[in-house]
Length: 313
Image (cartoon, rainbow, N blue to C red; front, side):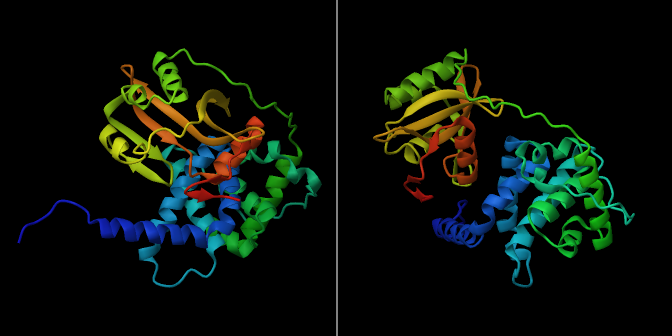
């Protein structure tokens, strides 16, 4: 019997179908999960990375469950928290402890709603304090649930929340203005990419990629060579949109803008990696609803909500 060295398309199709079903089941919690990841890491970029890893792990761990998941929100937030704590440990960062020491109650009032405070927690509290505070005051978990997520006790959770509130109330926050301007890079390969894309010149654009280029649309698809790109994501050519450089949360990106009758809309967000004048990696956020909507608010450009195969309307 001849042995084969490939993964059957039936397995790939079935796995894709189950993944889509899983994402549908947890869709009600995806926005809260993305915000949580952003707040505990202190950065939309790091939060997006944590969100993606959480989504991949939460699906991949399902075969290891011996009983059904009765609380989907708890399941997702626990995996996100464990993943974040593991990242902190790898960076030799002290997680902190949650001790059952009584602390005077602090009224935090409406300041909880201020985005600047929430995204600055990671630089002012320990990771365990940050998670306990966010889970209780923002995402409405009980102390008992939080104790399970952060591996502590309900009494310790209550005390940690009060300490976090006291610490935050003592801080002064100044609102920083987001960077919204477009900006051109000096990289000739990126400039050539923009020119080819905006002219719909697929052949010229493909010449800029290395043969072994990695093309990934986060939580959508991955292609491991130029040949796979030609047969896959680019088999129908370029979309006929406009590509423009922007600075988004301090990083240079390429925004793909679709023009409707009234105004441009964000169709995709891309980041290209260039080595030896060749694009060796292209990363796309086309399938990342929460990320693109947050970027839309940051840049003041509407997001395209309906773009086959996705419909976010």
